[in-house]
Length: 125
Image (tube, rainbow, N blue to C red; front, side, top):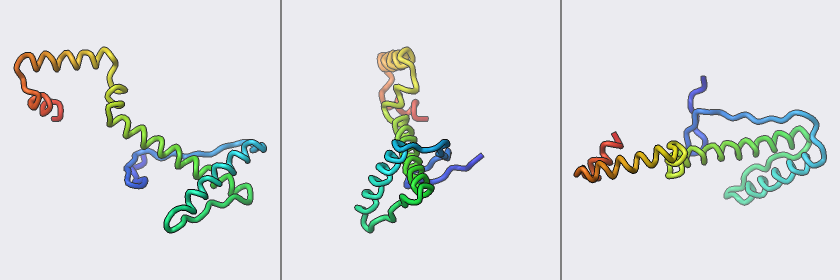
């Protein structure tokens, strides 16, 4: 089992790996070149500029492309983690019936004289 690791300022417990098999056709190569070209433009605009990813020979282009794809997948995963900690996560964690029951329970507790501060403290602990 892998321990968590830091990715930028974020902590993750999973590690993604990316590869592809088969022979890249012309469309695959053009897609890889385009994505690596755009990443190299982003790197060049940094202060100080980042080191450009290699695009030749073909094995280097593949490695550069996979590196960019790995970053995209990792950032997507971090975004999904952030979403689960937001209101979106609330919707994802509970079914509509459960959310309806939670709301009804809150109303009942408030109608029974319980303070909102007491309810919040109860749900945090």
